[in-house]
Length: 208
Image 1 (cartoon, helix red, strand yellow):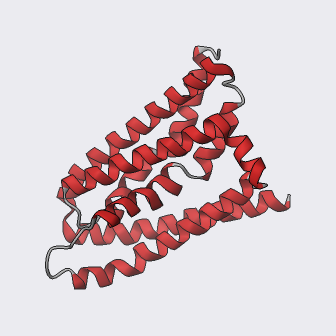
Image 2: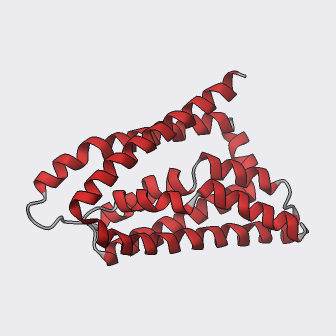
Image 3: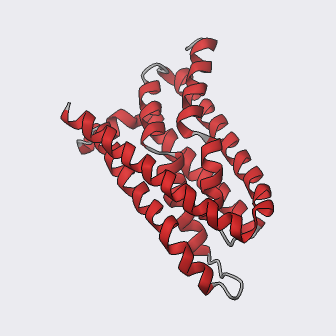
């Protein structure tokens, strides 16, 4: 069973790759127009799905990728392309939504479920970096005890991520519509750059 240092290093690695503070503003941007209850539903569902995906790769990640013949660089490129699509929507589509929102925005159950699954759970929480880190860490956490320890580390990381989502909802009250509009577009540009970096790193690894 891994020692305390290995457990701490694994926790820090996953915390950095998931990056809960970095996800908080993206969570706000993606849930614009939702009330506290709806945001909480999105946060809980995204956390559960994100944990499920990372736990699956923690237990059988290497085997899953090898079965489908998928390399981690290829997964990184795919995740980057998906993130770029979301960034494009954040930058351009919100403008039309604001004009259409003369009345209170209607939030459907399907919309809540869809946003929670994509892009929050995948690829923002359980993205290429987090999945890659989980697969690599699983090699050091072998056996039943090691796997259980890795799952506990993953759960702790996801719980912290959800806590950040809850705090982000409170901060949203101070932004107002203008603040949210500016933040959404700014984060869209940042997310687009992050997506390009994902693709570039993946392509570089594929051809190296």
